[in-house]
Amino acid sequence: MTDTSTPLPTVDARRRKNRLRYVIIGLLCIGAVVWMITLMQRNVIFFKTVSQAVHDRSHEGTHSLRIGGAVVPGTIHQTSNGATFELTQGHVTVGVVHSGDEPGMFKDCAPVVAEGHWEGATFTSSRLLIKHGSEYKPPSHGTVKCPPDPFGR
Image (cartoon, rainbow, N blue to C red; front, side, top):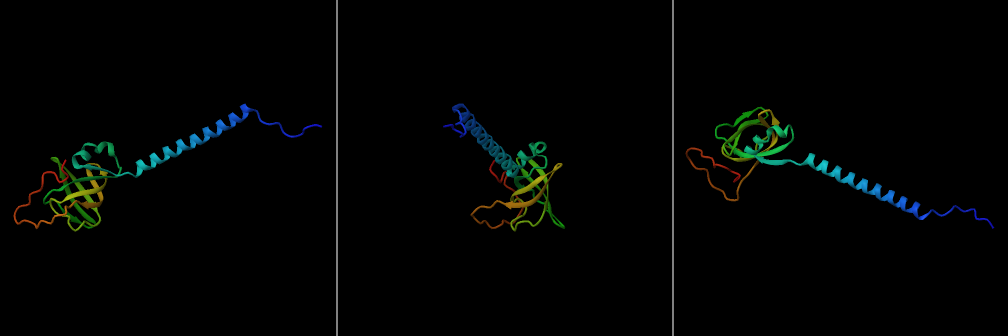
């Protein structure tokens, strides 16, 4: 009687086949991790104070970021599609061009976080966030004095 069935693979052939499977699975996992890290880095928006943002401006390019500081008194000027103003923090001031609506509490000395990107030495913003506490203090009558650092840095 002759056996016409296919011969069984050797132990070495099975090991090579399994090793190839593990290598393929490992490469797919590494590729997925690299893809996720790259995707996360593109979608993360960093927060920096005005002084940090100005210091790192040349490295930021046109990446989106948030910068926080206090609105310099007397610098808010309404435009046809938003406002221009200056933010200050840590003795550093930057000009901001904002497109869109401003929050209701947007005023001189308000602690503001502007989301946008650099265009040269000017920060172009498309979103403003106002930091406020849980206590209400009525406005005082007299000259406007800003806190030295609204973000406590």
